[in-house]
Length: 97
Image (cartoon, rainbow, N blue to C red; front, side, top):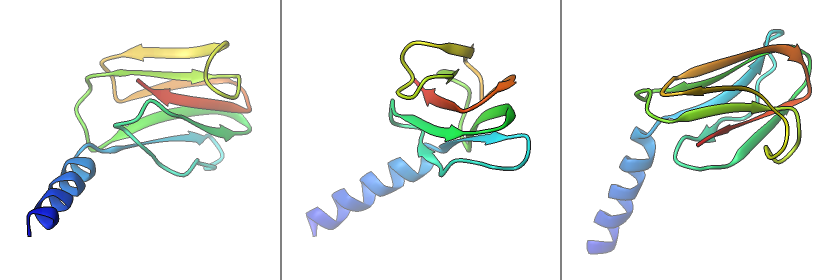
């Protein structure tokens, strides 16, 4: 019974933390990523992108990168926000940190 309570608590904490997604202006989006993780999601191709955090308060940083792995070429960044936009060309990747 204790194990079920622990699993349920972890699930509720994860579900309430929200999710992140990056979309191109043509409607192409990534699969959603966890807002709890510092993981790079993408790529999305095209021109013009919005990286959005859903179902959460603005309290972290969000970045869009033009390199796979989200390490070297940061093209858009914001602190304490729920979305950031980049109007350049893709492919792009994004990270919530």
